[in-house]
Image: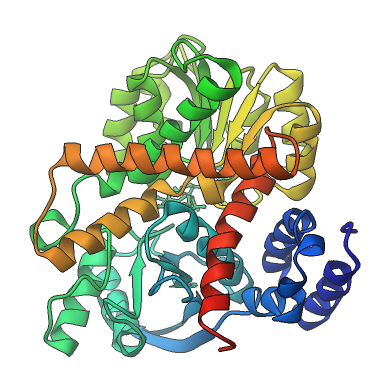
Length: 448
Ligand code: NDP
């Protein structure tokens, strides 16, 4: 499978031990493929058990969350925190509230987060958490009760220098506010223990836009370096109209691109002349499922009730920003057939391994999520800095730092790609660049 025997054998053991965790194994497989380029030349990696240690979370906390709904019924959900790797700083990574959440998904996310955080250059280890709680259709009061009960258990494992969660799917300003309120009540301390907070109590300007904006800053670097081009006039399609997708769409438009298709869980809308993002924004502010209503405002657009069909829309650039494995092989084939030349992942692992390989073989420029969507956690890191200094920065200060960080991440991935393989292979480049920082920190800190 991999070109290296040691990695082959370790992957077999990993499969035996984690057979029921497909997403986690998928993330490890992608990582090991990149590692094949370096393990042979560095015997210390094997001697010091670096791979064995780096793929195993330092700690997984799993707990019951009991809460009462508006009808007085008692509900039980599962809560988790995967504290993956603290070699370069406190565990850092979002909380996801979605019915699909399980240990496999959180382990894959925590694993990827470790290298993503390393790429930002900031002192943040990797972690991820969440619950199989479904926020959809719940009242504000139910969301608040759930968040409070979730924090009632999680607080023991957090701390501004220990573990600092943020948002992810299903967790935004509202949920972070309720979580933070409960943490503060229990601990009686105001610290930067969560990021993505509201602006009135320690949040950072630019955090809510950061992942989407960072993605476009990364795409800007790719276009500049690989094509001596800009995004101006390019046709862009984006999946997912949540926090990442919506801000990516707005930034793409601001940079002169035309966003021609956007999806949500119910389908997607397409208008070759460009979608009216003011209408989309107005609709998504009320309800993330905007697509069924959009045509009432802009009848020139078309609607398709299958969100996966968005990948068949002819475009220049595709930005998957919804969820893992949403872009399978057939979608990649359709993109290539219809002229797409760049795919950059706003979501975490939205492209399957087969689809990624297909795109790379077809010479499509491809940016992996652990590099391209690192803007969110980068600004979370900046929020931690502002909290520690007790001084907020302006939007422009944060945005300038974000642009700089995204350009640096691109450069690190590009440099490693060029050193070890094809200069266009940012998957290998990003994995190696992220790994190197964590590896050296682990070596310096002994066998722990
Ligand atoms: P949100 O919950 O805000 O948005 C995701 C949206 O996509 C939801 O409305 C969801 O609907 C919808 N969706 C799910 N599956 C599909 C699909 N197949 N096609 C179209 N839409 C779909 O989440 P975020 O925007 O925060 O996160 C999106 C992705 O980006 C995730 O992979 C996340 O891990 C990643 N990410 C997020 C960061 C952040 O700062 N928020 C940082 C870095 C990465 P429904 O709720 O019905 O499932």
